Length: 365
Image (cartoon, rainbow, N blue to C red; front, side, top):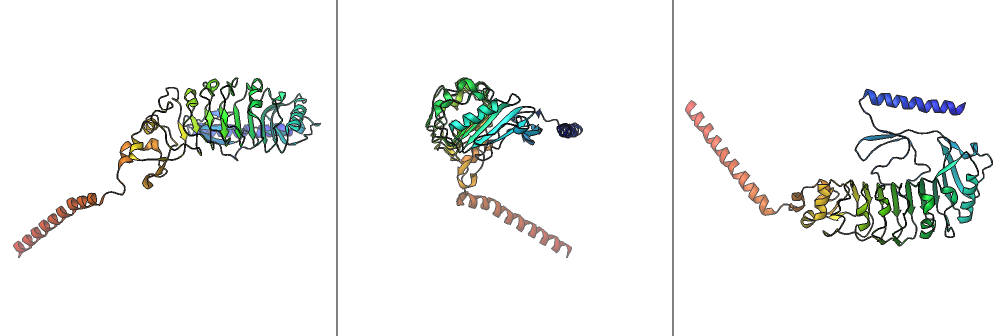
């Protein structure tokens, strides 16, 4: 009875919001599920669950509204469920389960997920493992066959474990790997993940990405984060991502972008709308570069200036080429020249009107 009341309460709220949108001629898309837009994640912002009540801006510039769905404890559906590790479990919209674990290890995690799968009423679709020891996890648990969101953060997991579990991850839409020790991304790591929309590979110590690493994601990936690594240039591997809208390369070792970079000449990155990278030295030479022209031509926002002082934090995509080459501060000779053309004519006009006034007064007298 209580669940029915809660459902009607949410349903009435939805109707009220829809009525308001109709009366104000404002019709944002309604999304029951994932929201993918160009809002980059923060390292500590991932809470249990990807469904929330929020209003955001989509890649098309329109508002997108996500309505809340009533959540229940897993114990309400499976009274015998007792996790061995530190895990929190929530169920939403019927039987879909979100599981967040910390301070666990490989054997305990496997046992906990196996217990969860023994409950026929639940379906595990989201798993977040943080601050744990998964060094002895050689295969992901078989209970992840319907997983849609996977977050591994400071777990010590081996790269081969993910590669060997590709069959389980075919429905995956969000993959975030954070604070792990992966020095490179090989060619076949994401094979079979054709549904992946958001990929985060942050703070891995990564310096190399195979040129074909993202080939299997070329028709699906929308957001790619490669933040806080040891990357020195925009990876050539991203040029095949024809649906990519957001690319985050901030806090890497990229100091400049060569005019010979293949990414600039790529015809597949037509949907890219936001690029986050280390701030650039916006010199006159940089303003004339192919990279700056590419940002302006396709209105790719996010690249900012670090110098000179008067251009700090300005977005390169909004700056005409003349703004890069303007002297700052203006030369003293230019100021004198401007003043000479402005000052002396003013004096001459003043004397003219003074003489005219004197003539008029003498005539009246």
